Each structure stands twice: as C-alpha cells, then as structure tokens.
Length: 145
Image (tube, rainbow, N blue to C red):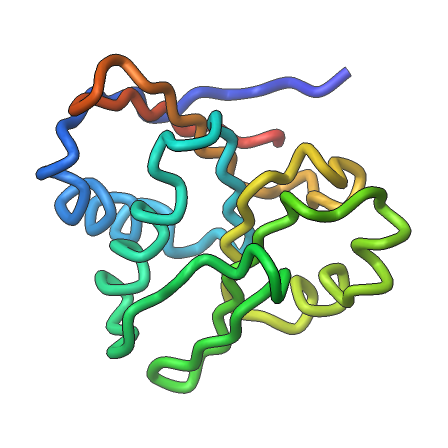
C-alpha cells in the first residue's frame, strides 16, 4: 500500500502558472523526480515549461511526446522532461532509457507516470493537477514517502 502525504494544495489561474512554478521550485528543489498526474489538457507541459523557466533553462521547453524525453542543462545540472504517454509497457519504458535517465539526472520531470508506475521512485514528488474550469486549476502536491 502506498501512503500519500499531501504537502501543498492550491487553486490557480492559468495566468499564475509562472508564479506557481517558481513556488514549486523554491519549495521542492531537493526532490530529484517530479511526476505529474493530470488528465489530457490540464496543463502539465505548460507547468513544466514554467518550472524550466524558473530553473533558468533559457530555451523554451516543448513536449517530448514523440521523443519520450528531452534533455536540458542549466548551471551544470542535467534535467530531463519525460512524457510517457506513448509508452505501452514498463519494458518499453526501460528500453527507451527512462530508468537510467532518472538515475543520471539531477531532476526528472515526468508526464503520464501511470504508464510505468513501477519505475517511479518511492521518493518522487507527485503533482496532481485537476481542471476546475477553462481558466482554473487545482494542484495538490504529495509524495509517496
């Protein structure tokens, strides 16, 4: 049984995404794996791009839906943005190198972790995003451990 401990619960507008991202970076910088659970269209990639901006990544971050993962480096730190949506199994995820990438990275930001849940480390930060209406989102942050 997995125990979730909720440590942040916020409602925000899409215009506040950059602010929310900066707060997340400030509060959870010590976590090396962040997983984003949300329905399609909730703004996972938008929030991750804002997190990248808050971390100082100079280029725009785009969705790695087809490449599975995009690599960034900022201030000597290796960051992976992963999108597991197209993965069919954990075996395929391993073959794509996501497990090794998470071990090597200083920070991994993972969309659609439910596609390979056994590859998500127990100490991962879990960010759940809900769509409240076209302009409002609820995010609650927890960890598996």
